[in-house]
Image 1 (tube, rainbow, N blue to C red):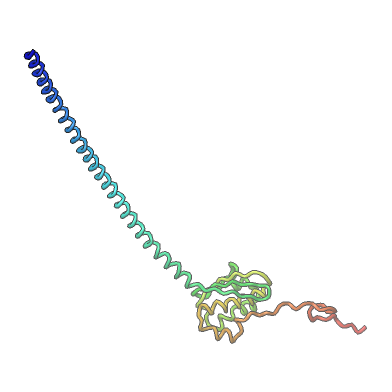
Image 2: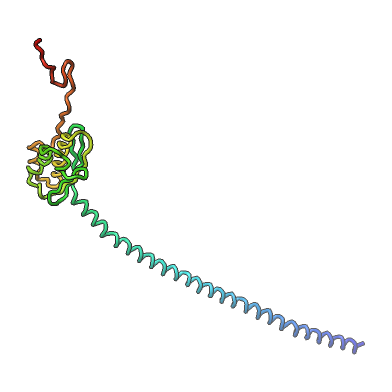
Length: 216
């Protein structure tokens, strides 16, 4: 019996050794796997960081290009604005009225050309007296040959239009040369002629025209 017990003990010891030897490499492999996995994760993290840095760098370049374009565009527009302002400063306007006529007058520095509704002044007004009335402010201030005039007139007849043109030219001359105001005011060219056609009266042919007297 003792020999059998001894054999059993020896077999048990052998089995325990085999179990221990079998367990040890398994644990090592498990540890090796556990150690290797975080290393891969770190590599992926590093690659993600590099990718993020590349993504951040690209928009920075795009922003610089956009900023440069924004700075260049206004610089090209500034000269155009300056030109429009200068063109507006050289033009002076005035509005004249007489009876039922209204004249819109624009004056610029020139050589004495006068255009009325797309025609020359003398060809538009048939009578020399109407041309003389329209030119009165220019003759008084001695600016007849120093300015160009473009006028648009509507409403009323020729006499009313001539008076409206004179009124508009006088008002535009004040803006062209403010020192001429006193001279034009004294001549009465800045005040509108408020006279209208007088109404017809009862018993008369017109406002004051009486019927012819008949003795018999």
